[in-house]
Amino acid sequence: DAKTTQPPSMDCAEGRAANLPCNHSTISGNEYVYWYRQIHSQGPQYIIHGLKNNETNEMASLIITEDRKSSTLILPHATLRDTAVYYCIVRAPNTNAGKSTFGDGTTLTVKP
Amino acid sequence: NAGVTQTPKFRILKIGQSMTLQCAQDMNHNYMYWYRQDPGMGLKLIYYSVGAGITDKGEVPNGYNVSRSTTEDFPLRLELAAPSQTSVYFCASDRDPNTGELFFGEGSRLTVL
Image 1 (cartoon, chains in turn orange, cyan):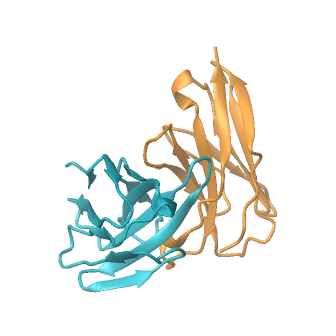
Image 2: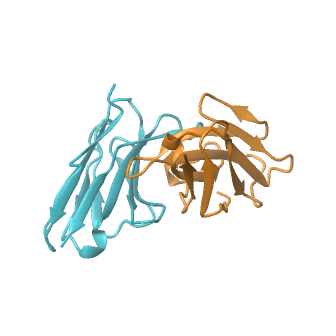
């Protein structure tokens, strides 16, 4: 699986959009981008994943650049409960999801 | 539908003691995993299983053992606990390796003194 790079921390004002970047410049053509988050002391929670097209669900939007070397997770209206560590992971289909590397992630702090 | 359940949530061990962390899932997932997470760090894979009777080592297996006698249960055994094993342990299961959506338990916080 390709390596990912994320900023260690970010702040966001409550009610504003939070845009979390992830660099995956060595991504292969069949590798997906996944995002998880971990709210303090809890188990990580799946957010969204995508291959090349932008994706949206009830939690967030995922924007993947055309060259697929980077992506951005967007929380459209951040709340205090979105304060968490966000992990960007890259993996290929038919590979063991649990063997994906969860690095240090980005600590997002949503401020009132 | 409880998802992934871990017990105990907290435990203090003395050096050299042994214990088992329990993990159970009720989603009929074949794939199950154990991770450890040290303070301020990401998750490291200890062991994983792709089905009943099949287990394999992850990144940091030393000092641990697992078994998978049923689809539902995946216990993690710590033998001869050491202070280096002080960590938070997470169990996870996988609905489908192609979707990559891991379901995690709430964690077990272990302190070895």
